[in-house]
Image 1: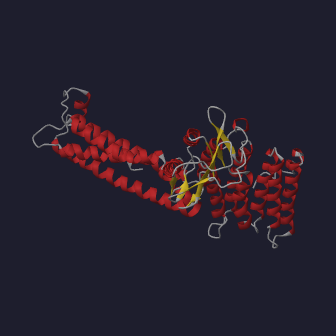
Image 2 (image 1 turned 135 degrees about the horizontal axis):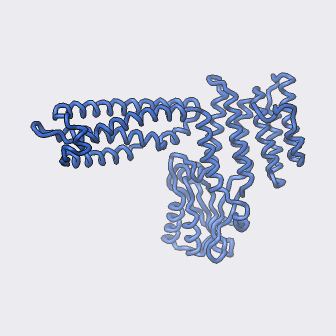
Image 3 (image 1 turned 30 degrees about the vertical axis):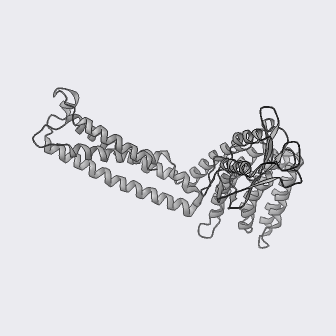
Length: 435
């Protein structure tokens, strides 16, 4: 967040230093606007602009801190990174800092007895007006950004992009991954701890080709790794034995593998689609807490998760292989499967909402949508498993009418799994499709 204001401040300093040296004709545009402005009036104007800019900058920082606090308490602490990356907030701070530095620089270069620098004073005046407009826009922007629907839409969009990046289309998934040999191979472990940020596939494929190896990676982006955890296992191509390497080459190879799997203590979404599912699940879980008690927000979050789950089912899930230019498998990548994602979404919420039929029904609506999109026996089996877990975890305190609604959606999941989509979605007044 600080880079843009720093660059803006440096640019404003250079601009202010240059503008005070520009001498314009008195009958020009800037000269006519400032013909009645003497050195004292220019000094007063610049002081007002500088003081107002720094005051409004403080207000902007305060509003940003309040927004971060509300996002952490009501939505999820894992959403703070999205607020700090907001380009609009960075732009507003850059304009305010630039205005302050420009006014201060021009004020510093005023000399008694000289004429007021017309162009510099005019620039500071217009920058003050621009700052006022940006602050008004920022107040509107922050009010919109704190709406839970806007937050969920933003996470939805990023997660959808991450799903398409992490999970290829079925036709682009490549050859089926070969099974790992029964022997241990050459084990590469982590020297540090943190979350896996991404995996450099091309680097690992080139490394394996250079040493004529096959690399079986054991981690995916988003996994938490500590020192000593396994990262990969390496075998000689065409055999189930560890590669024969001297100690120096083996250590160099291990360093290269570690360099292709960078770690960090902040989880990011670019290569980790599951993190977006986690964020939306957090919003739903917070909404069900006794302090907030907003099941409708949880239902809306599950609506976003339903759409993302359907997108997920149209992609390749699970492990896959990467080949070199000669179509030789060099890298085997583990991958998250449907059970992982459904457990991530349904597991916590079916426990939090055991006594809230509105959310239980929304969970089963998600599974009905997944059942409609599921195209393999394995995926249909996972959807059925989750539906049974939701029903099994319902509270005994539910009223008969509420339990009947939950059981009705469970039956509709079964109809969708059997291919009877019309019956699965047919209802009296849309009560199985809305909160």
